[in-house]
Length: 282
Image (cartoon, rainbow, N blue to C red):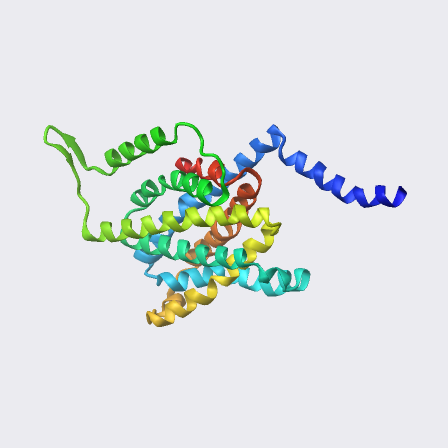
C-alpha cells in the first residue's frame, strides 16, 4: 500500500498542476500573456517593412539573422538538456515548417504592402482557427461565429476603401498592394494551421520551450538556402548603422523570442481559438 501511495504522488502532483491551469484566475493570466504575444506580432509588419524598404536589407537574410539566437540555443541548451528523442515527433517538424512559411510570407507581405492591410487580412485568422480546430481537434466552435465573420468582413472593407461616397466604395490599391495582400492571405492560412499544431503539440506533451527553440532554430536553414538561391546581397549588412543594428537586436528579442514564447505557452493553456480571438488587439 505504501509503494502504491508513493507511485500515485507524481500523478497527484500532475493533477494539481492541471487544476491550477484550469482555475478562472489562471485563465485570465494566460489571456494577458496572449495579449503580450499579439502586441509583439502587431509591430512585426511595421519593422519588417522598415528593414526592407527603408534600410534596404534583404528579406530572407533578415529571417536568418532573426533565427540565429534560437539556432545557437538549440545546440547549446536544448540538445544537451533534452537529447534528440523529441525530434522524432512529426508534429514538431510540422510546427517548424508552418512557422517558417508563416514568417517568410509575413516578411514578403510587408515588403509589398502596408502593415495596416496585412493586419486587416489577419483578422480572419480567428475564424479560420475555429473551423480548423473543429475539423482537426474536434473543439466546439463558439457561438455567433458567423455573425462575427460578417461584421469583421464589413469592417475590413470599410477600412481598406479609400472613400465612401454617393457612388459607393472606391479603392486605391496598387499591383504591389495586391501582391502583398496575397502573401497576407498565405500568412493567415499558415498561422491558423500553426496555432492548431501548437495546441496538438501541447496535448502530445511537447514542452513549449522545445517547440520555441526548435521552430526558431530550424528556420535559419530554409531561409539561408532561399537567400542564396535568390542571390541576396549580404554585404548590405556591413553598411547598416549602429541604430539599425540595435533595432534588429530588439526585434529579435521582442518578436522572435518573447512574442513566440508567450504565444506558444498561451495556446498550450487556453487553446488556439481563445488566443486567436484576441488578434484585433494588433
